[in-house]
Image 1 (cartoon, one colour):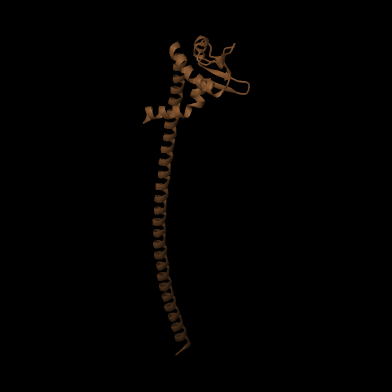
Image 2 (cartoon, rainbow, N blue to C red):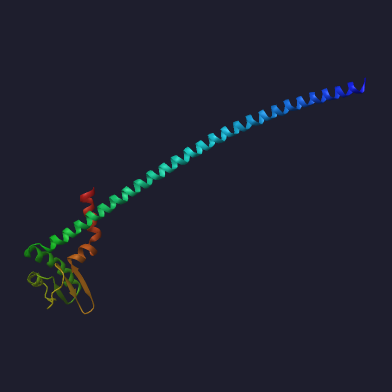
Length: 189
């Protein structure tokens, strides 16, 4: 076998091996591309699921937030109605008849007369006469010479204490919780 034949055989073997390597490499590339394609499809599917879950969670949170804001606004409106109602109650009490005013004061003055040995009662502006008549049943309580700058109720003063029984204080502070409960039950139940 001559050198030329040997070279030709080596070249053909090399070309054959090169073709086999190319075919093998092409097969490996196709396999890798198929794996990558499947991986990318799986990743895309997983991301789509995560996105859908996050979107659903965001929508749920937005709905909860909207409900909370609506509830807060509803409560604000109810508070405003309660405030207006308390103010209307105060005004109604300030404008009751002399007779009813005296009856109301007698009930309030009874508590003061029982609690203190003596006290000076400052009447509401324009209600001095009714207050004086209500005090007739309680000799330990005396009418003050001054008149208060309030429209209903009174202020009782002793040497050691002062009791604010003005309608404003009674309605907006002392009995507020009880009145709010009654109003809420009547209006919103």
